[in-house]
Amino acid sequence: MRLRSVLGRGRRLCRSGWRSIRTAWYQHRFAGIRRGTRDRCWCGGPLLPFQLHASYGVCADCGTYVNRVPPVRDELARLYTLGLYWHARQRLKGHPAIELRANNDRSDGRVGYWLELIERYAPHSVTALEVGCGSGVLLAELAARGYRCAGVEPDPRVAAWVAHHTGQEVRAGFFPDVDVPTENDLFLAFDVLEHSPDPCAFLRGAAAVLRPGGVAILQTPIDRGELDPPFGQSFRAVFDDLEHLFVLGGRAPDALTARSGLTVVSAGEAWRVGHGVLVLSKP
Image (cartoon, rainbow, N blue to C red; front, top):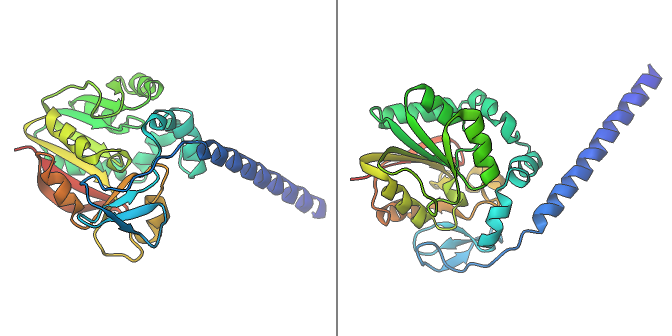
């Protein structure tokens, strides 16, 4: 029994040591991503200090939390690749890789929640564009329900992987600077807007690809002032200064929507803390 205990402890130490080495290697890879600087909000407002996180400022005009040291644009194409983002980054954060993501997203309830949102706010829609479609799990669910779907992913290898595994059309590129189908009933972007280097251009792009009467459903962190610190236990996950460039707070949802050509249908829903929902429509 004593020998078995010693061997078991040795195996645990070996696994722990290997995890530490792997974590250090991943951190080293992400530390090499070049950063820029930003001293204005997407709306043009000046930034006030954010005492809880030195990498972010708070817009004095609209209340958006703005990443002051975002990755430079050229580095975003390197960050959101199959290997670096969907494998290394997800493992570092304790999330499943893309190959396991569909099962994860079904089992934790988010896919069911998204489908319920779509049914409630756009029950008669037949065409859908999902930007940042990830594993393609939602595209597959919508296609099974008779939707004509298309998706967008930044990396060509990810786009090809999703298209192969779902049978759906997936375009490669950074929205809105990518050619996509227009006249859609639905525009979907779940946990994507916070990654965009220009959220205003992102929403204007959404308006451009929707038909009149079309609906946009976006899931993104929205600080509604209910928790201290913002987002409570999800604070560190939301204020991820490698990935999240703008986090909405204060008047930001209304101000952003007003510049997009869309109107607010609902701004009070959330899947979980740190995963708020904006439902918008095109007049």
